[in-house]
Length: 329
Image 1 (tube, helix red, strand yellow):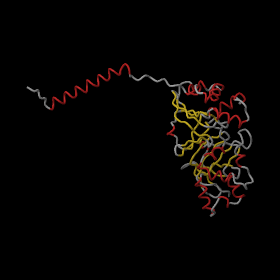
Image 2 (cartoon, one colour):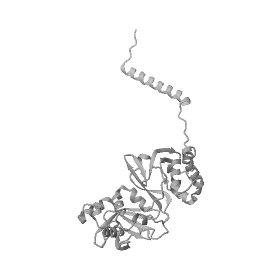
Image 3 (cartoon, helix red, strand yellow):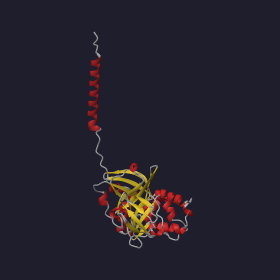
Image 4 (tube, helix red, strand yellow):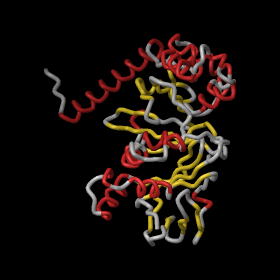
């Protein structure tokens, strides 16, 4: 006589079989294949364990920053390799890291550190604060990060060549050059949104060498500076307003005076320093700041420029991006 199971009994038997199979697999894997805890190295331990970063490791120890990057916290480190440091030393006229003043070296290294963990795919073009303080006011120095098609460039001169090296206290991105301490000119040249301003500042026929002036170190007149930087569209609108086709068609005296109206000398004016009907004395003449309804500037022609990005911190001043070119009266 054959024993015949109904559908319900078959279903129950199938469930029991699968349950026994899972229990068996679990008991077999518990001892032999149970995942082991992986202890990650700290940021400094990663650097110290690689011969490609021996210069960086030595620099961190010389400046006592190894303790910070070896401790608890959450940091992002942009790590220049040995080749990058050798190039940096040659450009600065040094033979060894020992010749670099310790405080100067510490500031350079802090300019490669950011608080928090920024993963490679999280980068968006814009300004980010570093751990280095400005000579002007100790505010964190800004860094312009340009991300185009997942290619990330820092302050216009250093590129991430390997991203997302995980550490227990953050993440490391390897870079191909030491990132210099930024001046105001650094940001004008690095930010593609300020390309037209860079063209204006470097025009061959100008009688004023604006790049050299705006590179003046803090502590030497006329630094520090406040720069109101018109974006690219502001210059496009200006050409339409003046009914000319190119920047080169604006005569030198007018362009010179116009650029001077965007710079305050011997002051670093933050957005928090602005108020309604505040007179600002630029190198070219007075303009008026207002904050009601959003920060703005009014020139002598009653033209209003909105301040759209504020407090970009350089080592010799502060930069604000505006949406309209200021014209002399």
